[in-house]
Amino acid sequence: MKLSPKTAQKIAKTLIWSAALFVLVVLVAIILYILIKGLPMINWGFLTAIPRDMGRSGGISSTIVGTAMVTAVAIVIAVPLGIGTAFYLAEYTKEGMITRIIRFSADSLAGIPSIVYGLFGYIFFVIYLKMGWSVLSGGLTLSFMILPTMIRTSEEAIITVPNAYREASFSLGGTKWQTIIKTVFPSALRGIANGIILSIGRCIAETAAVALTAGAVLRMPTSLLSPTRTMAYHFYLLATEGISMENAYGTAALLIILIFFINVVVNAGVNKFMSKGK
Amino acid sequence: METGRKAKIITKAVNLYYGERHALKDITMDIPERAVTAIIGPSGCGKSTLLRIFNRMNDLIPGVKINGEILLDNIPVYDKNADVVSLRKKVGMVFQKPNVFPMSIYDNIVIGPRHHGIKNKGELDKIAERSLTQVALWDELKDNLKNPGQALSPGQQQRLCIARALAVEPDVILMDESCSALDPESTMKIEELMLELIKEYTILIVTHNMEQALRVSDMAAFIMIDDEKVGRLVEFAPTAEVFSSPKDPRTEDYITGRFG
Image (cartoon, rainbow over all chains, first blue to last red; front, side, top):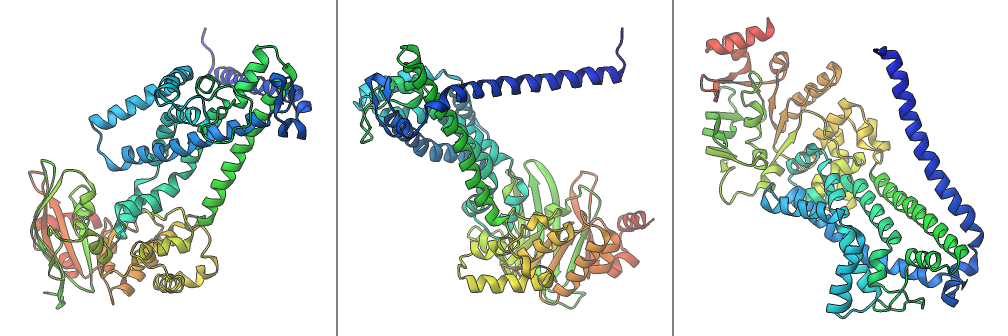
């Protein structure tokens, strides 16, 4: 039996619609469930108090600060390195052995489970470099973890900048560096910003890699060498150790809100920067 | 010189290779200053390649080799010590499609001067006004300089690109089929502009449009590939002569075929 093109079209449309609808329902369900369970837990005290009694009571302030510090270290290191490498790959070198090795490494690294990064960070930063469980060890480990994402998303963004822009800049007597910084970079910024958002999200949400490198201490971190516990790991411990499901949901809800918030803020920043010229 | 003008650019036996492929052979021509020289010929004969010799844009393509002599104001363009940046400052270019940057109209115009170190806002403002006036866009756009350049019509965008090239105060302007993506009215405006600009500038255009070559150019260079697929300069003479009494039968065939 052969379907008429019209029927086939209808069936295809229905299937595609249902796939999209299914995904939407699942996503909304998860987010709603966590928000409904978690939002009532979030109040000023929850945000500002140090966890007490292993997290059974008190707030989660030290884990918020710990997460922010670890993520900041990772971003400060990985973003410039990643963008630099991407510009090297896209603008400064011909296709060859070295670019293939870099791309292959980046792609392979992107696929490695995060706990492997954690193990590496534990052996290298925590033990060998004697940094101990600390914000620094955790941040450095995360920076390695997000570097492949930063490189490949930035490279994609740079490659999509039309060559006509480069030609125009060169034809005006711009040097390679001026062309890159004044023409290519602003045009690639949106794509690069997406890479940064993705990376921040992965840092905030990471559990295994920071558990092995940043520690599990609930004290407020005071320096880069303080041990700390991130929100995601705190949430994991609260739930799996049966300490407090309520606080676990509260932490999870805050994680979701935070990632949403960062998305909005970075995008707004990019829009503002772009609108300066648009 | 048949036009009676001093030569701005002189090429002597110029050859260009893309790797092993010989693309242009023995190009010898004296391009007069303050005139429009049109480079015409069938697709793929090397017109754009020839044009891009004069601002060394071919340098961006790996594997390009050029020999022979190219002089701009009697200074070798391809000298070992030649400064490509100051060459491109002297030789501006307008491309086939308007390639306005995703920035404001103002920033588009002053990006060149900024590249060359001008930071003073007053000076940049003056440059923007002067360049936009030259391309007859100032009155239309003076109140909207902060608007995105890419929101303009294609014809305006191309004139903005010309203004952007003029902003670095070149002597020579290369136009690589700069009207081919535009409607007839915009094309006409740009042609009028060219005739205005030759009072001060030397203009080289590549065009597929024979009527355009006839309308705007003083000199015409006809390029065609020979039996070995190498681009050669078949004829180079005042445009009127090339079109009314071509010396070479190939020129005649091409032109009549085109008008046919």
